[in-house]
Each structure stands twice: as structure tokens, then as C-alpha cells.
Image (cartoon, rainbow, N blue to C red; front, side):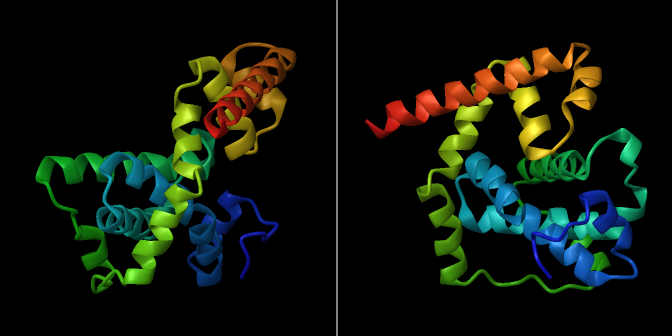
Length: 187
């Protein structure tokens, strides 16, 4: 079971019922990005880990409701993540409804798990995510669609209602801005 599995995210998700390892691949692909997403917003490794687990539990329970025509699996997962974060903030605690549906006991977070999550931020990944969030909207959307969601330029152009050349330029400008910002931070 490898993150480098050649199957696309949608294939892995649809195979989850008959092939639990497929969901494991999907989990490994998005565990760290989701941890960073939550860590940036909560500043709590424990809460970030809990919310990440909630996202995957909810995704496993409701994976049959995913529709590829509505967007990539990554967007679907981040939509779940956004909802879980809002729920957590409203109630000041992580809902464990999905975990109960799966009859899963909460997993205690070991010190080395917390260290691994904190190492993600120390590696600069959280800073990079913040830099991406500060890009102009058109560049950010183009960069995320091309780099994170791995969409072809033609598809991105159709969704953004512009030409593939414009999308390429937006991605290029976003990358140049990130390189410049990272270079300035290192100085």
C-alpha cells in the first residue's frame, strides 16, 4: 500500500468498500495536508489530529455519496474538513458521531504523534500553506487546481473561464511569487 499508487483519488474512494487498502492509500495521501490545515487553524496538535480522524471517519461512512462530477476527492475532503472545523468551533469540542457510527474508540495521541505533527510545521509546510493562501485568488485557484488536484490545464481553463495559456501564466506567477517569498524568509 503506497501513496504512489497509480490510481486516481476517485478510483481509490470508489474501491473503498471492497478494498480497504484503497482507502488506506487515500488516507496516506491526505493525512499530512489535512493535519496541516487543522493545525494552522487550531494551533493544537491534539485537536488537529482529532479533526483529521473525524474527516476520514466521515469520508469512509459517506464515501458512496461522493460524486466526481461535483469536483475532485481532495475538494470533497476539504469540504468535510471545513464542516468538522465549524462543528468543533461551535461546540468547542470535536464531534465523535462518525467515530461512533464506525464503533471506533478514540485513539490516544502519543507523544511521538504530537512530535510528528509539530515537525510538519517546523519543516515549513504550514508557512508554505500560508504563503499560498496569501496569493491573489486567481493565482491561488490555478495553483491548487494544477498542483494539488493535478487537473489538466484545459479543465482548469474551462472552470476558470479563461484560456489554458492564462492558467499556465497564473500558475507560473504563483510559483514565482512563492519562490521569491521563501527566498526572502530564508534571508
